[in-house]
Amino acid sequence: MRPLAAAARKAGVQILLEHKMTAILREAPPSGRTLGVAADNKGQAVNIRARKAVIIATGGSTGNVNFRRMFDPRLTEEYCGLAGMPWSNQDSSGELAAMAIGASLWGLYNQTGEFGLSITKPGTIGSQFGYAYLRWMPGSPVFDRVRATGLRVADWQDLILVNMLGKRFYDETGGQFTANNHNSIEAYVQGSYRNTKNTKYNPNNFINAALAGIGDGHNGGGPIWAIFDADAVARERWDPNPPNVDIKAGFFFTADALSELAKKIKMQYQRVPMPPGNLEQTVARYNSFVDGGVDQDFGKPRPLHKIAKPPFYAAWATPVVHDTRAGLRINAKCQVIDVNGKVIEGLYCGGESAGGFSQHGLGRAVCQGYIAGRNAALDVLINPGAVSVPPSVSNKP
Ligand SMILES: Cc1cc2nc3c(=O)[nH]c(=O)nc-3n(C[C@H](O)[C@H](O)[C@H](O)COP(=O)(O)OP(=O)(O)OC[C@H]3O[C@@H](n4cnc5c(N)ncnc54)[C@H](O)[C@@H]3O)c2cc1C
Image (cartoon, rainbow, N blue to C red; front, side, top):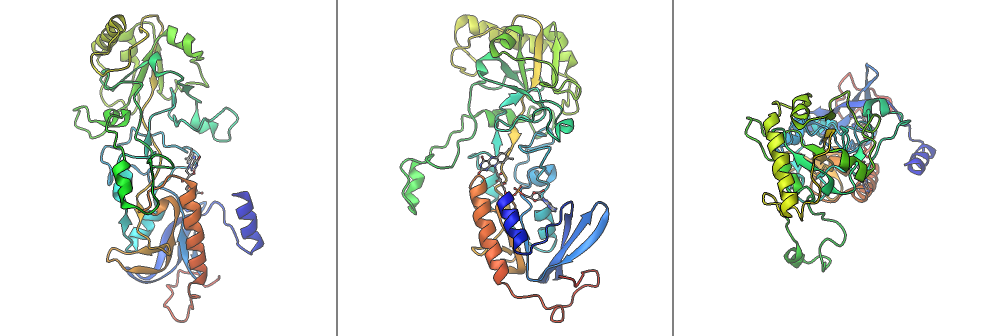
């Protein structure tokens, strides 16, 4: 990003930090040209007039619980460890601002189609933020908000996963949604509709089991807890203490007996108490599977380790919400389209705030940024005399 920012500054771009866009200004919503944006700068409202166009590049929407539940009602508030949080929250502000002036959403199935990294199995446990490929370390400028680094799981044989009610729900070594990126379709022929025949849908994933409702009147599956004992700590070489685990905010618990452990699990997302008897029975049954060499409930490949040596631990292991693949409808010029299928003049969008292009990551964002920027630069110069500019919109470029 640094070379891009340097190049932009060299070309005369003014970058306004700590300005949060709060609205998109349109001539006569839901019609007319896009005129600029309203922003908040540390409590001070400012309006910024576009000379040519506005490009929405605010990133994704999955940090906004109400917004993401439009696509997947299961994603209730307990999925609170968005990848990138707490540095970047993906609050859907770009999508909401564009929708308020008539924009349409698109590619909603891409969000819920159960492929790719839209939701991931946690890579670390015992901390709110368990995204596999991002670990916050003490010394990070946001560590006061992260609170704990988490314990990286090397072998899912070392623990069992239980739901809010203390019951196992799946094979802990199970995977997540299959990715739809390079080489995941073999053989791939560019442009051929026949590629579909090589797509392998994998319904046997951890994510669906974890998100399944548990009959307490809510859609979401509730917290998932990793349960393990002192022997597992030794095998994994974990240090189950702060700053590795988050005891203070309720993402990690310890007790000398399983029933005590279940009673201790109290935190904002544990909607109902975990019945101590459930946890005891779950562990006893699992230990019998270790003796017998077969997981009769979920088919975990030969369960290896009993959970028997105190102290016992319960560590937050709830799935992590990651990619946004649903967003604003755009055309091939990255112009935003309204709910009637018409171009909103002077409004562009790219990256995770755009919908309809189901690819993970920077490749999509950078390409669409280039396309949107190029077309916005070619757009007509807004002539304040030719359009009726609301008095609140500054005429300064
Ligand atoms: C932990 C993590 C690891 C990843 N690893 C990879 C990887 O290895 N490879 C890969 O290709 N992709 C990776 N990705 C995905 C990739 O980072 C994103 O797809 C990409 O950054 C999206 O780009 P974007 O420009 O759409 O949005 P973002 O990069 O999210 O940028 C949006 C910007 O808009 C700002 N913003 C939001 N709302 C407002 C507002 N209202 N007003 C003003 N500014 C606002 C935000 O602060 C942010 O700076 C990763 C993502 C995460 C979170």
